[in-house]
Image 1 (tube, rainbow, N blue to C red):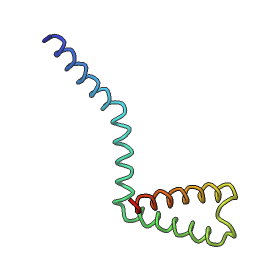
Image 2: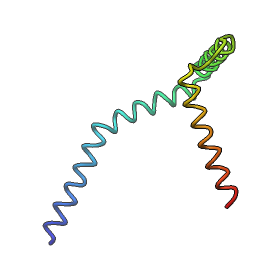
Image 3: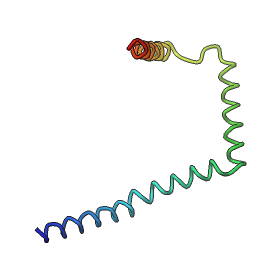
Length: 90
C-alpha cells in the first residue's frame, strides 16, 4: 500500500510539473498580455478610442443585424424573458 501511495504522489507531482511547463506557460503569457493592456494607460485609451469609432460607424448603418441574426436574438431574448418571469412568480 505504501508503494501505491508513493507512486501516486510521484505521478501527481510529475503531471503538475508537466502542466506548468506546457499549458501553464501559455496561460501565463496571455495573462501578461491582458494585464499589459489593462494597466497601460496609452493602450487603454487606444482601445476606448477604437470602441467609440466602431460604435459611431455602427450607428451610421441603417441596420445592424441580418434577418437571421434578428430572429436568433429575438428568440434568445424571449427565452430569457420567459425564464425570468417564471422565477418571479415562484
